[in-house]
Structure formats: C-alpha cells, structure tokens
Length: 445
Image: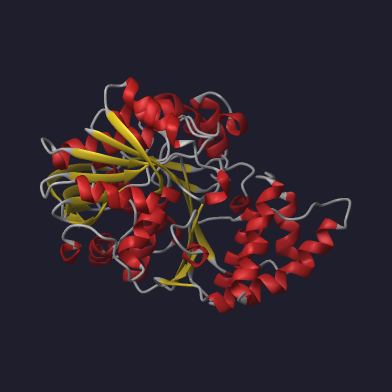
C-alpha cells in the first residue's frame, strides 16, 4: 500500500467520529500548527447549493487579475487532492502525506486531552488546506463552507467577503427544520463590519440574513436587488448574459457552465469580487470576463459525450433535482431521457425522484460505493415505477452507465445524477484514460 493511500485511509477513517461541529477544536489544532489561516486573505462561500461553482468562479476571476489563489472545496469527485487547489493545480499526493504526518501527532495529543477531542475528518481536512495555502503563500483563499456556517470549521476565517448562495432545507436534524433556522446558521459566516453577498430568492431566508448583517453592522448585497442580470443566449456551449453589478455594467458576459442557476452563481461571484473594492482591491472588467469564461466546475450539467448526449450532474437534494429538471427541459426538450441514478440514504429521495421522474423516460437505478451510504437501488426503482416510469437495477454505477449507453439511440440523452459520489464514479469512465463499451466515445466533448 502506498503512503498516500495509507494517509487517506487514516483521514477517511476519522469520519467514524461524525460531523463534530464547533470551533473550539479546530482553533486549537490550528494554533498548534502556527495559525496558518492568519497568513492569507480569504473569501468564505456558504449556502445550500452552488457553493462550489460560485467559489470556482470567484477563484478564476481573482487568478485572471494576477492573484495567487487557493481554492478549498468539498466533497471531491475522484481524488482527495481535488479539495486543495492553488492557481488551478491540485495539491500533490506527496504534500498530502507530508502535511497529514505533521498534523497527526497534534491530533493525537488533542485526543488525550480532556478539554478537546480527536479532530474530525473535516477538521483535519480544513487544517491541511490552511497549512498548504500558507506554505504556498497564496494571496487569497476562496473557501467553501462545509456544513451550515455558525459551527463549521471554516468559520475560523475572517474573510474579506462572505457569500451565501441560497438557502433551502438541508441537514434538518443538525441545522434546524425550517428555512429560517438554517438561514440563521448560515448567516454566522458574516463578520462584524464585514461584507456579504447573497443570492437567496427566498424572502424568509433573506430577512434572517439581513437582520443578522444589520446587527453585525455588515454591508449586505443581494442578487436580484443590488446585482441584476439578463440572459441573452444559451446553448450547450454556455450562457451569455448582461449584468448590472455593484460598480459597472457588463454586456455579453459568458460562462461555459450550463444553466440559469450558473448565471445566478456568476452574478454572485461578480458581486463578491466587486465588493472587494470596499477593501481596496479593485478587479478589472477584463479579469472578470476572462475569469468567468475560464471557470469550470466538473460534474455540474457537464456534457461528457455527444450522440448520445451524456450529462453528469451532482444534484443531491430536492432543490438541485428541481433545477436539473428545469435545465434538461431547457436544453433537451423532446428527447428521450435515460436516467442513471444513485442517491445517498440520508437524502429526501422521494422528493428527488418526483423531480427526476418528471423528465425521465427510463430509470436505471444503481448504488454508489462511498462508505455504504447509498440507498438500496430497489427503492429507487420502486419509486420510479410508482410514478409511471419504467425502471430496472444495475447495481454498479459504471455498469449502469454502460447499460444505458447500450439502450440509447444517437438522439437520446443519458443523465447521471443523484449524488456527487455517483457522478464521481461515472466520470472516471471518461477521464481516467479508459472508455467503457458503448456508442461513439470518440465524440466525447
């Protein structure tokens, strides 16, 4: 077994400790390694959906302006190294091994101390990220929040600007059973006298965020009110839109990511970057244009093949499933859709299947392999049949994709979705150098 595999298995095994929320532990761990988070500026991105895409866009714009940029996101699709990126390049396996070996004695010391507990998987991962960004001397780190905000390990940062993409019901046993309660948790990433941008379109959530920002004397900007956009054109090659930002009007901005929700994410990213002017950081229009056009976030309405089209999307909750339904109708209306789906067992799979079955003609239910978290595919197939959609089971994700390709005509669309883990496994068919048996893989996008 390689040292990298040993180290990642050690880190993954920390998941048995569960999602231990709270800042006391992570603050202690970071202090033990020299408080690396104090050596760089940051942008903190929270919300229910769209965090990763928005963070990737912000990072891309700042890179286009010439900053050295760290990007921390979660979860990964295929490799743990994807979570830690500097100027578009993931951390090396060797650096993961080295830093975890440096962290391990401190974590074990904390476990022996009654005042602390053994750092969790996410706390160890955050510490790795901040130490790596400090070593790399990044100018700005764009950091995605893990869970909620108030007690999330990333909330030790004092960011230049805090971003809350949107607020929907999620992790209700931990964050609360109403949108208002969840919004309150997420609002805590807004700092005293800070800057904040949100794209939430739910007034009940916005009112909570607005009250919280007012109490902290923070300046809050809202997409749809302070930042406005108008879509001009859309195709499978991307979206083109005009945007009236906080400082300037931008005509004909382009993103390669697909979907109206990605335009919202782009508007949020531009608002966040423009707000940096209040901190003395001015980003040019040309950098905003280049950064948005160059930004890429895999597995989000990602077309990996044509004839038939194969679309990968990490829709992992009812809100994301509803967005996927809208965008499949927008880009592929009238085509037969074969759905390959695996959903984690802690998700609201019935509401998700309501949305998925709304655009699917055939369902192939399968089971992703991550930590025995996948729902039994028999349940998914049963839910599809209850909604009048033909369904069958192929247990393995990759085998399910291959079976869908055998059944598809050149004009059909195969949509692979239900979880980041599902998409990560399927994506390896195109991007690890191997191709499954199927139709027209030489036409991969």
